[in-house]
Image 1: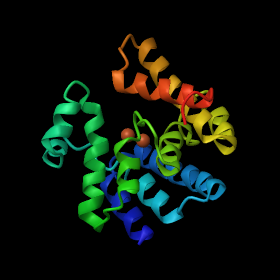
Image 2: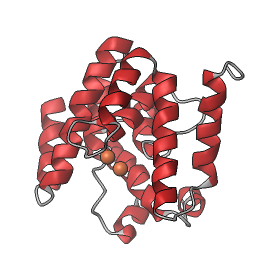
Image 3: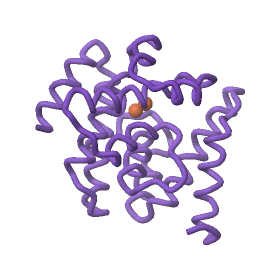
Amino acid sequence: MIAEVRRRVEDKLKAYPNRLQHVIGVYETALKLAKIYDVDEKKVSLAALYHDYAKYDSIEQQIELLDLETIKDYIETPVIYHAFAGAAQLEMDFDIHDQDVLNAIRYHVWGRIGMSKLEQIILISDSCEPYRKFDDAKYILDLAKKNLNQATEVVMKASIDYLRTKEMIPADKQIEVYTYYMEVNRGKTE
Ligand SMILES: [Fe+2]
Ligand SMILES: [Fe+2]
């Protein structure tokens, strides 16, 4: 089944070779982490392969797959729609209703408070896969192999810092997740 999912993604992204390479990088990285943390490889594969499936669909196409609440929640940041649309597409294409898999796709950009290991693995792999031109990628991967919560904090901080260098304002939801993982790592939150 994973081979078929992969074929579908390769076909969908064939006009975007860099994005396809990124997706394969996320898939391979996520599988490595899944082995270390004993997370189901099939679930990790599904989430990694589909996480950016809807990336190049128009906003109109993406919105068509979303419920009204999600559309309203992210109206100021439509970049997030591709994540929710990718999850909805996987549900439809392959009849996957496992909420952990779907959440890993939905929250791969900003994460969320209290992520499962699978969700953290996808979030982290998205930022540290080997084809990403990002200085801290290797450091993040090495850290992730030792401690998922610490790597999550670093990934959240890196994306917030990146926005600030572009003079963009991070979303409240991003800051909340970052703060939560900071507290987890300092033993203030379970
Ligand atoms: Fe994405
Ligand atoms: Fe991605």
